[in-house]
Length: 77
Image (cartoon, rainbow, N blue to C red; front, side):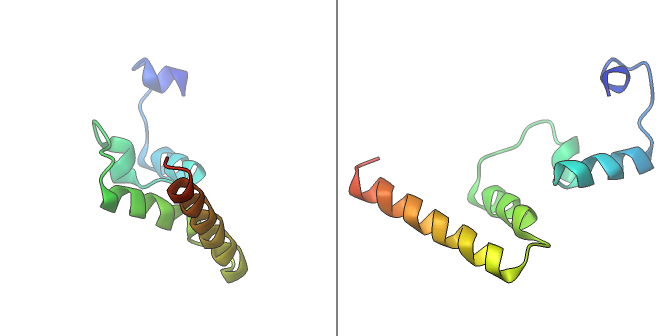
């Protein structure tokens, strides 16, 4: 990775695909100059995290988020 970052080696498409799969992001996310914190970007990140997870884990994640947001609302955060 360091050699690619320093420009000493080229990044093949196969390596790029393996890298984004390992990181759990999309290729367009990886190649963008900056990533905005727009609602659609955040929702896309959540979707990527949840894709492939069993329904039970997805429901648990939703419950954790609900609990967090409820805590924030009740504590003025």
